[in-house]
Length: 330
Image 1 (cartoon, rainbow, N blue to C red):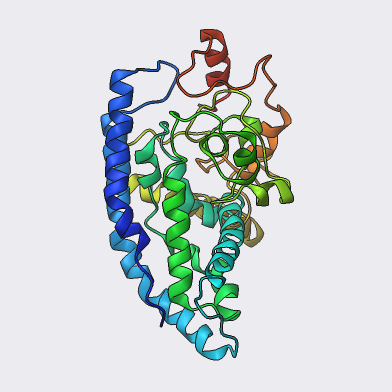
Image 2 (cartoon, one colour):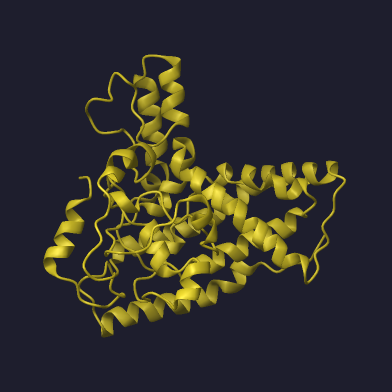
């Protein structure tokens, strides 16, 4: 078994320090156009992060058992060496892209991931707003284990990916030089991912690299200031409700379904999917910013402003902000 560090644990002091620095920066240099911080929202995000540590420890038991069984059965072995580790990180980032994309377009998976998108703020504490039901993630990395990557190496790569993504949850960093923006997931790209405007929905799924989005048609650049949250916001700071609200909505929709095909659709199709009998009207039961809800919203593409998106901290007109806010579904 390879002895690899717990990069998430080692990064906690940096998480705390950067969060404090960002909070102080908003106090010293306020930006009325940025989402900024709200005490209750930040506390909820931190609480979700702490809760995820507990629940992840529980889910880890069956997941490690499955990974270990697969690793035992495969005849392949990939040693952990200085030159194989970057390849493992690349492979993990590739599978992360598809996991992330899947968690936006399949409703039962979205029920897990919606937690991370439920804040109407976008700051370093948003990165800590993690789900408590990550048992839906592990199947996407089975191919890595089947190809001979040790489960401990997969866990290390996943941790490194998570640590990288912490710093992209901020409005205090504008666009980076073009080579970085072309290859890497950056704050600009991830602001788009967290936005609730129609043309921004279901975009920029990359973890460390944004090249997967460019390759598979899910990339959109930041052209106007994002409006964060869900297309139908849940408006609660209760961690239990944040963690479970979409599962409750799925159960409600399944109970009201009139056929087995409709029940299956409510679970396995997009978050905003509606059966034919309801497709003509009514809002989707899901509180989300993806999939079926996105199909109609995407028809109204985000119009390019006369100027490129301004870096965080730059002023935008009140009219432009009002137009952006108007695109959110109440």
